[in-house]
Length: 205
Image 1 (cartoon, helix red, strand yellow):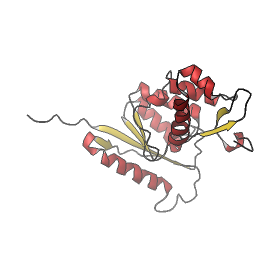
Image 2 (tube, rainbow, N blue to C red):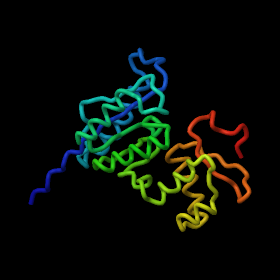
Image 3 (tube, rainbow, N blue to C red):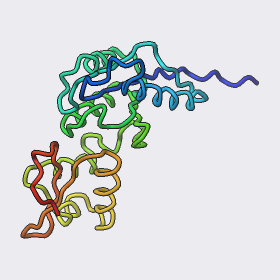
Image 4 (cartoon, one colour):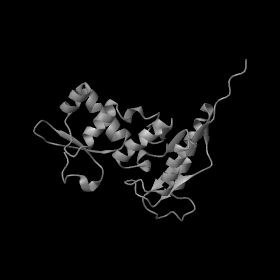
């Protein structure tokens, strides 16, 4: 009996760099990100992963805004159901904004698109950040300007203290690469996500 053919999985690579310095070189940062992501896709060839011809490269654009031509073209192609998997070198190449990240997650899930970060090892259908989950609830609490405490997160989610600490260190800081700070508060240490260095206090504990 012949094995069923593997269904092609259409993979798109998105690359970004904040400055246009060095982009005129024969091999630049965008190319390096693209090559690393291409190699990752080749490793998944047994699962049918296939790199599409279109490239999505935004050189000289900040990750703090979605006002980027190739990012918008990528999102349009997702809406047109031309893509199954998005591959980036690091999560912050896609966006540095938690709010924008949450919106993209909703779009990806709505169109059955998976997301992979080669370096950060964030993969799957992003259920860890999907709207309505406990993880998304905690991220929203952390994004609030007033911040939140471990006790408040435990009360909202039913998690144990070690689970909360593991989420803050393993998911928020390491996996998503977000700027998480903590400060003394009346009800214990207050944790808060800041999007930019300017938002950070001069001395973060």
